[in-house]
Image (cartoon, rainbow, N blue to C red):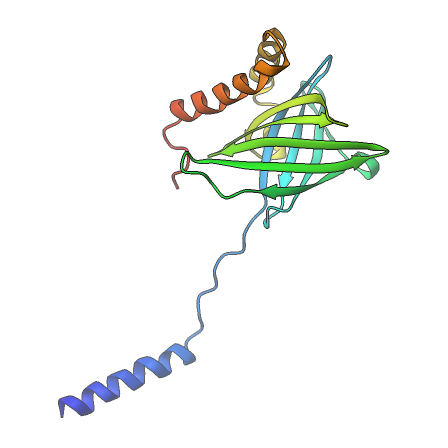
Length: 185
């Protein structure tokens, strides 16, 4: 009798897995960032969207002034090819990106850590802009403008171009120490 019950139970469990609908895993979502974009004589905030597969990055919006969001369209909608490396033991994920704009080659090398991102954008191999920011939606672009401008001023105060990556890493790691919830769901 126990054998019959065991066999019956096993058959019911086996058949029920085919009869009941299986729960679907959630689709990966794009990751959105609001980035301070600090150049030689310019500053803006750009909205960047990393595709769910991590293979492309688009700059979709920018601020024309501290309170005005402009949607990038046509030639201004820049799409970058991205290579994400696996996360390191320190929680940092290196990435590189490249794009063409007219006859110019643009590249970015940077790190993602928790909800923060940093990078150095180069134009034909020369430093063009420093980027730094956090996960955020288009509607949040104007919220941290004063902090972003302040950090851009810090970038301009460093001794030389070779010190900029150190400053970015410091911003990234200090922010991670201040926000204990990074990486937690």
